[in-house]
Image 1 (tube, rainbow, N blue to C red):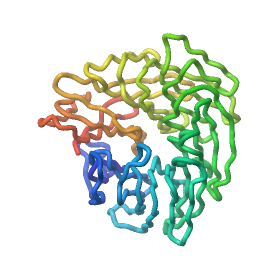
Image 2: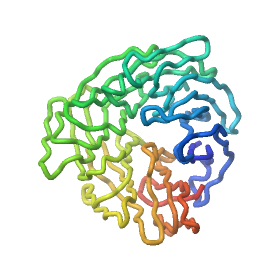
Image 3: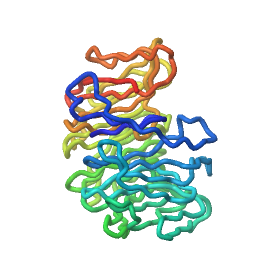
Image 4: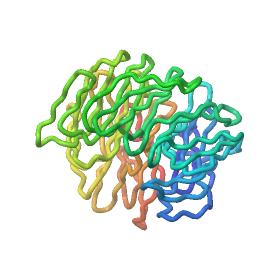
Length: 389
């Protein structure tokens, strides 16, 4: 089962529908009706999936703290029918960045909080630094009780924007003004191990770890150059703030990197459908060349691209959904893709107007208001289906 989240609904789409052009919606859950003091499109739930279960995290009393949406959070584990199996509420000013599950169904939440957080059972955690603080905690399978809680660092000193759960470890890149520390936390007790650092200014938007614990980082806003744990890449004065991909071997040694010109510092994503099948996706502003594949500049401000590559950094294919005077589709969220059960890539977009997705598949939101559209691209690059939500 694959889960998608709109600004108002959590929608389940059955796996059986992936061979069709018209997906089957099996159920939907409305988000909290609690009032918010910002545009509701930004007041989204968080969601993660594991086998036949999903976890939702809903802000109950949204407020803005240090440019973040924070508040009490209700976490609920749902089955494939949308029934609540377990729930828990964390009280305090919490902002969820990302959620993921391990191989046995425990849940990991990467977040940012201000002041203090109180968990059921009386566990209370107070920030150690001035300002807000990044944190990582585990909720146990079945009952969502707290297993452990770890501080990641102060918002004034670092940024933690992504994580990956693999082989009993939670891998987190921690960015600072001088570089990025790649660390891992043991799933069993949260004990931390610092693996290595890459020096230089950039921001990490995605991390993926393959079965042999080779690590991929997707970054943006690189400035002057980066020392990839001993391998230095200098950037010329006319090539600043680009996107990049870097692969590290399991022992931390640099393997390869690719830099792509773009000065807008937006977030792109990586997903591993296998050790040698990797999807790279995100907003597209300028012309972009990925190997032998050339993508064109957006006519307005942004369109989006999806590409497939292998573990050596070679691109198998790349495609874009081009904007036009009659329609536009954007990936506006840093978490905009997931994988289908058949190794397809599923993209959640914000779209309006008429969109030709390729392979004679189209959508048309005639009122020109932005609406969610889920599009699925097969591993051989063809469009499988697109559906307005």
